[in-house]
Image (tube, rainbow, N blue to C red):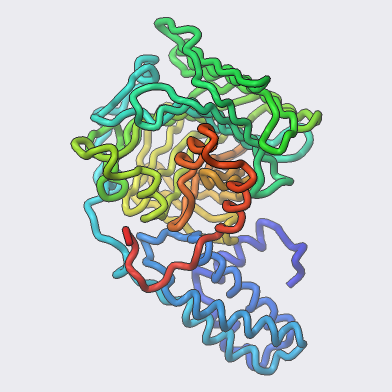
Length: 477
């Protein structure tokens, strides 16, 4: 198979092979020519990478506990293929295929996670207020952050993502550092992070808005949240030198169409054992400009999302006993993605064993009856099929940018709702793996001068993807 092939049809074919099995190919592999053998190897190698990157819904299917064994067989097969020796490859691929079909749920911890897809209750869904953003705590949880996600295609043809943050991290107030990140599609798994080692000041607070400003050594970020005409409007400007000394600048504006409430604004949301999550994601359209190293891209028809998150140990649990991000890297299975198209907005929030999802279409807040995530290309693409009372949401998500502090991805979203094509679709996917790094603790340590940026970046790249999951129990060691 030629490595240059990267079309929508190819993604679908690979997805079908992965999810319907490769039996038809493998049963004839002994008679197949070298091209078919190479196609089969590529399909199985992709399935191995799906296990490696945890690019599947672990709690829905179980853990691919035999993937490491399959990987060794695939390495042997690749050696033979490189030697143009296809005679003995078929048997190795048959064995690898069988191992990659083994899923085990018994290694996963059983706990009472929230599932609003199974038991929806929209009685507390409401529009947000500026007081929600001003709040220090909610449902017994202290604020984690106020943050924005921005994803779009620039005038230069490249895809960009921005993550500006105002951090609270469960302390009861705003803290330093201020960090913003810019990612671009030609720099996959790299980022331009500007670290402002100052506590942001609340420069303005009115009945309808709040404005934060932080500046340090020429780096700055101005972050405003306002309620205008019933919508949340977020405007942010930032500039400075990133961790590598590159000059960056951004100026973006987003307007909300949808207020998505975690757990449908019900208290007691359980994501992982001992942890909880409350607050909102507000999703809508965005526009702006981004400059990296003197090269500027402009954006229209982009996506913006405004996060107002309260998270940490569940109410009544000591904040020092359970680290929320630590639990995320212990239990994994995170598929957190706000997304925007011209036709609708939505949020997928499948984390650990919990399941939460909603879309807003023509003013209606719709919760799916069933959601299925199907991997296509490992660490690059997947399909989401959400069945609703009004019709199916069927989308393909393709990762265009990625950073490794929060395992955050900027994505395109294409597909249909009720058979209607979706246009100008983008999403912010967070996909924290089991064994990953606690990005919150790491950035806080960098802000206090306890971690060197160069050491952190090397550690990030060396440790991703993490070690393959096996038959050992998931959870605290």
